[in-house]
Image 1: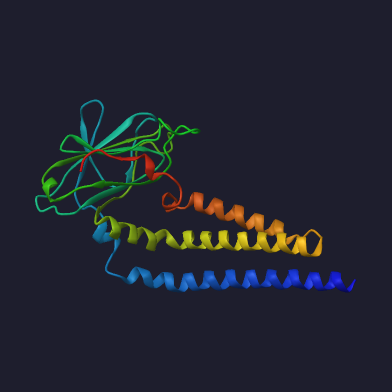
Image 2 (image 1 turned 45 degrees about the horizontal axis):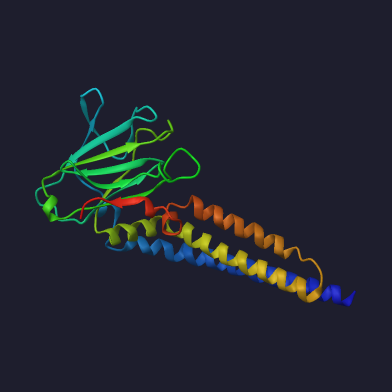
Length: 248
């Protein structure tokens, strides 16, 4: 009975440590996360300020606001056009794909393509991710055409914010905006792995089954789910291999 009581206290002690560390980590991230937005890199500085025109399949065109959602049938390609300013000097245009295949054309030439139709094992759409199109000062005054295609009616016609600037600065802003949930997911992943190892090790040492191991697996699976749903997941999962640089 004494040994069982000792093991129970050990389990409870480790569980309390993990919970306290999780709480402290979340509180610290929440506190410091507020200050990260006070830097010089803001969304306003990175949003592309040009106007966009929707080139419809019937030959007509319509000036649209970006971001926005428009009446486009599933499987139809939505084409939007813009002309870069004469004083353009940025090195990247970027847009988030919402289960869409994306193509960037600069002056009529394909510059960047994101499409997993030829490689995906399951599903009918390309996974959502940020697509970055390289540009340069030489593109000033040129027309940019963006084509968006999806097989899902819910996301057909969705045009997300178009960013413009240095790719590192754009990633920095995205991490400031969405990085907190990703950091929490990584912490939970680490905590889950540690909990599994502790539970497994204690089970071997004391020749008994510990419920802590099941807790670890639950935390581990929750962390994987959070990473899969995170807007930053392309940093961890192999999505960017489908981004093809066609020029430059």
